[in-house]
Length: 321
Image (cartoon, rainbow, N blue to C red; front, top):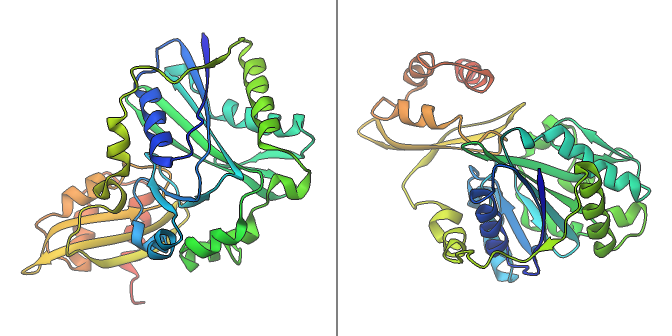
């Protein structure tokens, strides 16, 4: 196994996310890539989120901020230079989420924090969330990326993120800010100290010495245009309207449809679910059907169901009760 370390000196989120995608697409079979990066004054949304519902977009842009969309699922997050982002990229069996999460927690413990992994997606210190994580997959190439909050401007989370109140209720918290903590609030640390310790811990875990690799010379920056395009960030402009909206254990959904003469001609399920692909079959299946609860239930019951579809069926069946 070969370990490659990367560090971006660019703070543009579209550049950093496109470089991450390039590192994923070109990762050799025998290699683990570990990539550190920072974004300046940015809101990053999940792949399937409805941007204008999740972000106070006009306020963000008027304050000279940037909107970015990642390829993984999950919810919107605020990034600034008090936030350090990490990415694990690997092929096949070299990719191990529990091991990678433990590496991040171990790094923080090495720095004197009482850190532990909470579930699949979060790392906590003394009960407060200091790291959120998300995942994406490209055939047999895999990506795990996350944040480490060092000294992020917490008021900006409330200013730019428009969090669904039902989501907060399910998590039993008053706000996003109340659930998180900066590492600096617990024990002082610099970004550079964290970078150095992360690189050391990762090398120790993989028992593989490495150095910081230069950005690949053949990195095609045309990818940056894709990650900064209006269609990628805001989606195609349509006449779709919200038909169904609810929050479940796996995340919130906003089902929007364009309807002509009573029939569904286009639709999208926007969600902060960690899984990014589950809604495609539903969206395809309902095209051409009547936009009624009864008809939607009929279509959903013809699909191979899982916990997500079952939850929607249950909610639609009890809508209005």
